[in-house]
Length: 252
Image (cartoon, rainbow, N blue to C red; front, side):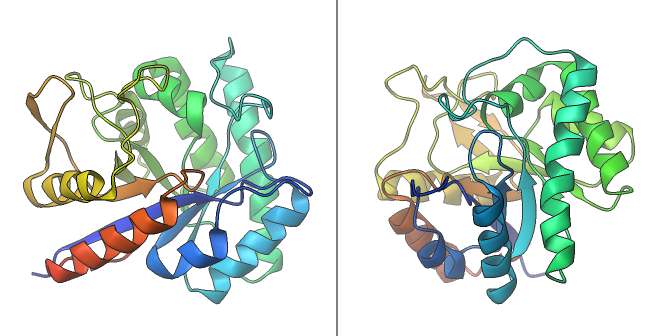
């Protein structure tokens, strides 16, 4: 049986005249993208353009809702209730859904962004609010992307959503399976060779080597490369090439 894995990237993060990332160059090398929905990044014009680019490249479209925190790029924790989380997801996914339907496409998945993603990975109340919102706004059709082994994946599965367990090419891992906090010096992987080796280990062996040197199991169904990374294009090119050479098909 042919082995397949999804390769995703966070795109559509520009805002007005401020440009972020290299979206058009990255799209040929990935199978799905997560489009910012205007709260942590993006705006209506950028959302429209990014959806059209995804359709042009036959790449699966995902909504990437985050906290209303442009200055912090959605990466700062915000005290929030479950009801507020639910409404936050509905509002943002609904906006991207509007553009996607207008252009003749469909929302393939939803992946929370930044601090909201990390909070949902460990907080069951927040995780369930996210999962319920995704189920309701998509009528159960969208796939929920979440950190492998997290509360978010458990919440999605508990209400009958399809889920994809996500792993990261450009982030280091803690022994408990969480991502190393960005405030730590070893949080980001900036060498594409190291990132590719980590991806191949995660996909082939379903495990990852943590910052302490221990090896922990994880389920790798979709691989993320952050589109705002300075070497994002190099990363997706190298990872795509390496997976293909290993006989692993990249497919959403």
